[in-house]
Length: 231
Image (tube, rainbow, N blue to C red; front, side):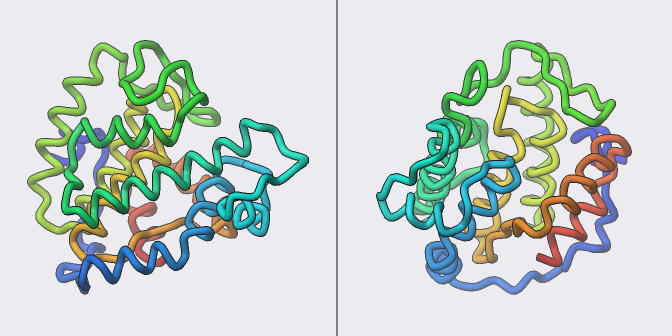
C-alpha cells in the first residue's frame, strides 16, 4: 500500500531476489562496454528507429550511414552518448539517484526530440494506447520529491532500480525519453551496486510494449519486474 501511495503503483516484493549476486563495479561496467552496440541498438529498436544493428555499429565507429533521416541518426548517437555518460558517472562513483542526474541524462537522451529536454515538462502529455493520465505538470516536483524519498528507503538495489524505472515511466516527468531515461537511472543503480545492467533485447519489443500497456492501466509492476529480472 505504501508503494501505491508514494509511487502510484505497487508490486509483489516476494519476486525480488533478496541477495542479488554483486560483482566488482569495474567488471559490470566492462560488460556494458563489451556489449555497447547491442545496448544502444536495443534502446533505439524500442523507439522504432530504422537503423539496423550493423548500421548502428558502423555509426558508433564514426562512419556516417546513408539513407536515414538525420533525426534517426541523432537518436542513435544520443543513446550512445547517454550510456557513455552514465558509465562515466558510475566508474567515478558519482552516480546518485536524484533529480539532477535524471535531468542530465534526459538532456542527452531526448535532445531535439521533445518541446524541451533536460527539464521537467511544463505541459500535458499522453501515453498512446492507454487511458493513463500522467500527473499535471504543476504536481511533478512534489511527486518526484515524495517518490524519490520512498525509493531511497528500498534497501535492495534491484528493487530500487526497477521501481525507479516504472516510477519515471508512469509519471512522464519529461516531454520525451521518459522510459529510456528511467531505464538508464535503473541501470545506474544496478551498476553502482555491482549488478549487471539490464537491456531489453529487440526481439522482446512487442512483449515489453504489451506489458507496459497493462502496467499503465493496472498500476501493478509485478509483471514488468518479472520480465526484466529474466533478461
